[in-house]
Image 1 (tube, rainbow, N blue to C red):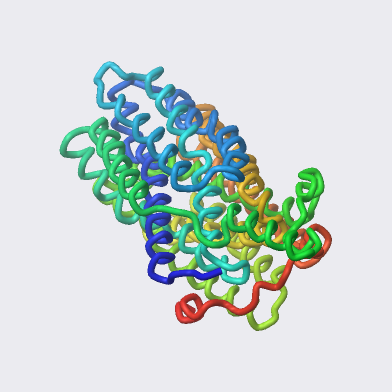
Image 2: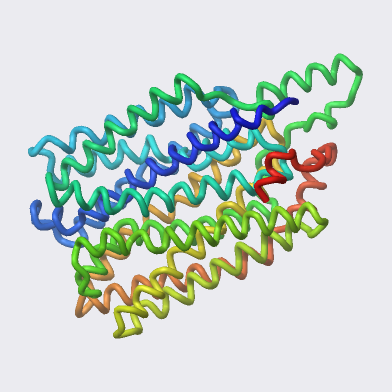
Length: 443
């Protein structure tokens, strides 16, 4: 199977932009939280309901599209998703759109964005051998971080200059531009389902056994695998914290931290800047360790668990300081370190799953872990409304998120057993060999 390095780099770049836009669409509501609540006269619970509504169909969509991804190429699938979420943003430009209208558009947006992480990883994996997949998965993870760093100040400027509704319209228009370029140049790689099916046909014609090309495995066996459970728990903990930040971090920094809205536009990008360094460093390190013979259980497990635990501790400390400087430090750690758990979990799932089922498995995984995103913003709003002071409410919400991440870290390192699960579920899988020169050079 021949891979053209330049074409693969372009596809990965487009997928990175895909994730970048996805995170901007998610995060714009949080950046505009105070102006929206002031204009529409919303309580914290009502705003939390709007934030949670984004995830109402998010998980369902991720699961359903995951199965579609087993049969449909990424060119049309990704374009359709972007079309849905772009048109979901544009109605917000209408002044009459209020509380109910925002809920409807956020539900529609969530339906379009639910499958994003899974479909982007699945598409990237069609261009990389299994031993190389930690690198593209890490790159896609930092796409969201770059989106926050670059997009948050720009969106804050748009909000300040033309109002919060204009920011939604800008994101919708940019999504349509990405879709046009993807339809022009986007495609699956040589390790796609179609290529695997062709290989299976060739193997059958050559008299080879089906195991040599990965026989399908019952889904109940895949979901009972310890590696799958570890990936679900780790991803759930990450998205609980992420959804909390996207909906409430900007409001917390303004109400409790005392920062200006201009400063907040830059501060919310700090965790993302740190996350880029953490994710890339761990991606390179784990890939090197695996290539040199370290077990994936050890390499992926310790990296994912360590970063989850660090984020959990930082969340506990975030509301226990009176210093703005230390608040920024703990904020930076709390929402940067845990980002590394996804590029550890996704390749692990890709390794234990037959290629023909990978799209569905990644989609179901993404859908289930994003259940946390439905619950977290609403629970946070209720905790703030029910507390004696907003500060006490934020403290309870951050403590809860920290506890979830620490517990998840223990479960992740204990259950991630990639080699054992791969041997049990894919006994005929073949060692893909060394990394290609392009990936080796990037390390």
